[in-house]
Image 1 (cartoon, rainbow, N blue to C red):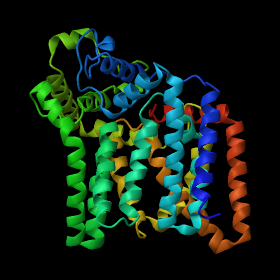
Image 2 (image 1 turned 30 degrees about the vertical axis):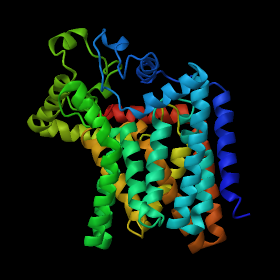
Image 3 (image 1 turned 120 degrees about the vertical axis):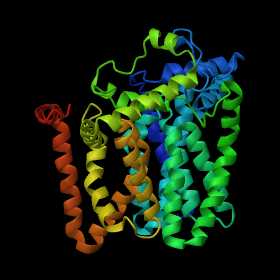
Length: 414
């Protein structure tokens, strides 16, 4: 049974995701049109470029490269089919659930099966496979990298882990945060040996990312590590009236493209604009950071998020008891650095939280297991009560949403 367990878990996770995908639930378009256009331009031989949404101005490094290349591979094989993309993503998401189980076996063996099963059916992770967006792949690369760095693999471990971090960064640049998280953990645990291991991880990461950086230099004649999208997010997130407070705050006027036609110069301008606001308005900035912190933990998407609120108390319990226990420290460092980045620089969206939720699940499973270990049978009653309360809250989701929004409005937080 033990040898078949990962395959059974993979089958369960895949079946749940395929069942969800085949329901064909409507999905907001978000960034899909950009990704689609770049993928189709690649297939037409026009290169990695987006222009349709940007008044004909060519953006050649606006998006990180992995996901458009993935779409191009699927479209080149199956035609322009979003269903084909979603089916592949269902398989990738199922692999993530198995990796969560594998990580759990290393971190807390008693909780590994619970973590894997919960990841297999966890609603937000299941739903992400149904979106033509980078979340499913980014989550997979992050969890794979953590698994490769935590589970002993001899001398290949740092190289494989670094390569996985590189692929995560090429999917979303914030994936780079896993490297300093690993370095801090390794230095804390192993001193000089940890420093050497971190350098090997960095070399492998560089080997994956630097070819794309070189491509960007050839295209722009300037240093662009991965993408030119970061400055835009930083500027629109740190402003007197940030974009995430507005209904249509993420658009760019044609006039701005005409004023600064260079893609690289626009990115630099936006970075300077965002950093200038932080320096010149420290009080307003700190308030925005606090609001973003609340946004990160917000439990509506916009509907009541049953799965996340069910997980949250057990995640907090597990984090409290195990944040620096063994290799849990790597997950804690990644969560901490990511939270700082999302709340201090970016806009604290629940979209940023999703790729970290497999790690929340591992902490939550460990927290629940610790509760059962200490209390025995009464602990199962506590777990059942938590689920029952959450079901009632889910049932009263609209009323609860109105109450929460009223409170946020009174405190001028929304």
